[in-house]
Image (cartoon, rainbow, N blue to C red; front, side):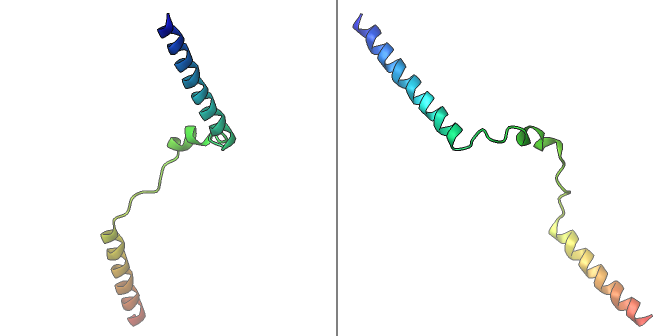
Length: 71
């Protein structure tokens, strides 16, 4: 019988800790924005561009500008 009382006391303490954690999360703003995370996956990120491709494009632009100035 004493084990049941011990388990009830431990259960109440654990439940109180969870309730306190929930109240802290609500007060600190954890649940303020519930819409944005649900639609974030619907928007595409920009395409990933490798550094080599960017450098190659810059070289082509420089050579194009030089040939345009000569003509």
